[in-house]
Image (cartoon, rainbow, N blue to C red; front, top):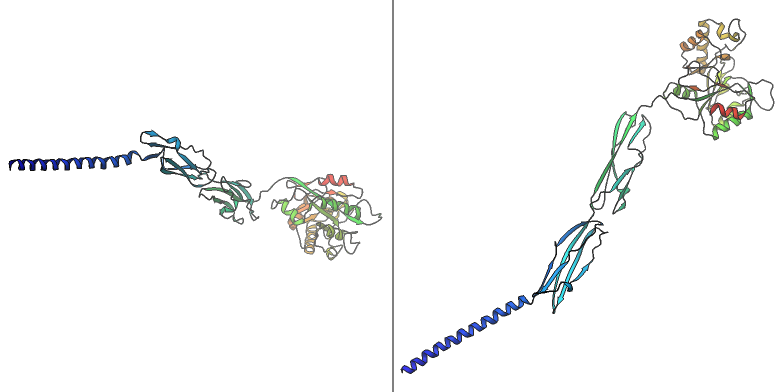
Length: 420
């Protein structure tokens, strides 16, 4: 009985040991399986950040990746697929792959290529422009160029207006954005100013008297109509402006500017070839070349109705004072210098009533004195013309404006020298 109990105890102990042994061996195998799975796995790591941002056209140097298996470095087996294009804006991927002992692993790096450069916007013309009150303003505009989008001038927005009828300083703002949202601006200043009074010499006043066709014996003051046409043709072809008397007056008083190539054509008296009743040579020629002229008419001698034309202004050459040798002791015996102040003034007023204009007056025979000049001013004339053979300027005495006397024997070279 004792032996049986002892055996039973040994059996129980043995069973426990077997169980313990069995448990120990199973635990070892279970642990070893997990450990081996870890040891046999591939390790793949990126060098640097997972996501990187660079500017357009910037050089990118990839930091790469590393890989290992157990204690072995297998980085040289990494395959890299890189589709980065630094010339394009967008998101790109660099893919790293490793395949070793039938095991694979893959990682990605994101590269963001951005455009942070602002577009270039440039003004056409000056950044500050001055224009005269009442004139038209034409905006020269701008050009816009982007490093990525190219020409984006059509995307420019404009803000600001110029009121040319009001003096002041105005600002025009230009703005443009590229496809990446980069924005550039520029502005232009426009000043609306008064027209300056420019004191410059420069307007040749041409003085004719009579016109003939074919042959004539009326003297050197008569000019052949063919020669007159040659002169008008030269003015036209060389872009000269023939001023109206109103334009000339405004220029003299600084109210307007006139082109550098400007002339004033004047004709004295109203005799041979100047009217529709006495040959009608002047007006058709003016109309043919669309050149303006001014006739200083002796209003009491011929009817103003004989000189109607859109290209011919009529001003006063007195009503009835164009007579020489009227008295003694004055230049040329000119009637205007012989009469009393009141008689001269009354004559001037009659001529103004007929012409309907007091813009300008022309002294008979180019002679004058202080009394006649005062009468001209009192009558209301703004200008008065004499001879002189030099150009008129704003600094000229407005009641002694010089003119070039055009004779029949003038050459084209001489004519050109007068107006040049």
